[in-house]
Length: 314
Ligand SMILES: Nc1ncnc2c1ncn2[C@@H]1O[C@H](COP(=O)(O)OP(=O)(O)O)[C@@H](O)[C@H]1O
Ligand SMILES: [Mg+2]
Image 1: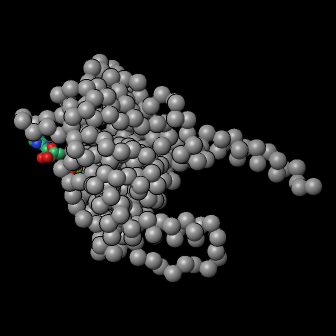
Image 2: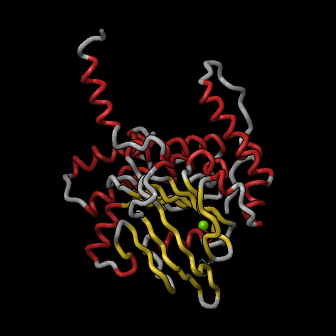
Image 3: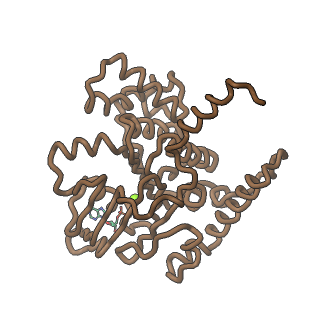
């Protein structure tokens, strides 16, 4: 018989883990979506960017949005978080009609979501710690001391040491700047995280580390993630479902294996072109290595990122 003291530990562990996603893709598809975009129309003057765009993001999933440069990914993100007013249609996030939200509803939404913009968008005159603390000052009445402690714990969660908190954004590497932006995005313990091209501009190793960080954080915190990316390695490594923007709307949505079978010309080119195939193969190898749980470290394989010699900017 095993030691009696082991039983409560196992129970505690089960309790602690019971809310976590085991297999994200098995999540209840009938649950009320966290994000619902209906018949969206976006235009700049005569230029129509979105028309008849529909989208639903389920609770707890990592949802990726891909599309060519200029397809309207960032405009979609800005519309979903209410920074841009669309020409038509409706956006609901966490049950709130974003475009018609009252000030109080808007304030609540901003506490329940975190955003990492493409540039990182840190305030250059503030230290990293002050950047992370800013949303807490704005949205809570916590004491200065508590905010300082919480800021350091957010930095630790994204893999930054407390002394990185004293630095200014200009003193950080690209990867550290993204991590600092992520620490600020999770400052208020959000349920929902928006990421715009989180790995763009990072070298292959930093990009892979950042993917792992996002996966681990979203598992640990039970986050729903809405991520815009053109990074195929991120799609394979991270996303539960993917939506493709082309022709001003979402032309396909599903798991990656489903999209690989699509007949849409852009999707075929994207997934079945050389970069797509390299990403799929490196993902297959990673999964095979995980299955065999080989003690022997695998040969380092070229990922799409390495094959491309780093990440391109869109
Ligand atoms: N502020 C703006 N004024 C005019 N046109 C814009 C503006 N922002 C974006 N656009 C246009 O909307 C389209 C989609 O842009 P965007 O969403 O940034 O593309 P991406 O998919 O690369 O993120 C592009 O054709 C762009 O030229
Ligand atoms: Mg963009």
